[in-house]
Length: 71
Image (cartoon, rainbow, N blue to C red; front, top):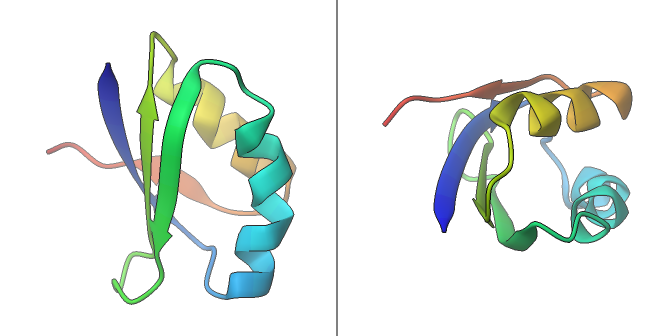
């Protein structure tokens, strides 16, 4: 299981609700959460064998910035 961390432009709970169907529809994602209190609006994803670029494109297609953070 991989943990991926992204900086996003998702700032409000309403925006999390917009992204939720996109993330829950991906079978490889076993868990995810946003930390909207963090200055980078962090998205953490637990997944099996998924490309960070795929997550970035998913959010970008929904109108949000998303960039993987190295940790």
